Image 1 (tube, rainbow, N blue to C red):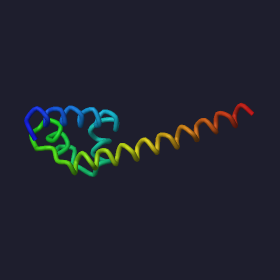
Image 2 (image 1 turned 180 degrees about the vertical axis):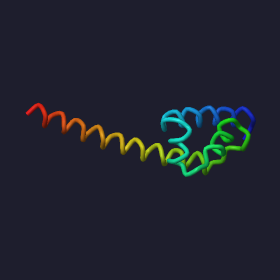
Image 3 (image 1 turned 90 degrees about the horizontal axis):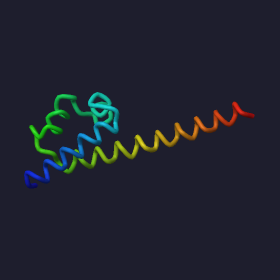
Image 4 (image 1 turned 90 degrees about the vertical axis):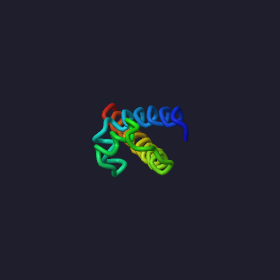
Amino acid sequence: MTGSSQQQLAEHLAHCIQVFGGITAASRRLGIDERALRRFANLERPLSARLLEDTAKALRLLAEEAATAAAEAEAMAEAEQA
């Protein structure tokens, strides 16, 4: 990958880290040491396709969990109103 594409990937990874809720939460979700994750985001270590695939998988799982929690909250709110 070229330097500019690595930079774009690092910026996207930084955004994904924010979506997870920060470096600690992202580290837990991805099973990667916080320091290593920071090094990837800062381009101190090269980003791999596997890291990006793992990040996408973890984000999909987070979205599923969020959708389930939202549905449960809505059901509870409706039950309270009844």
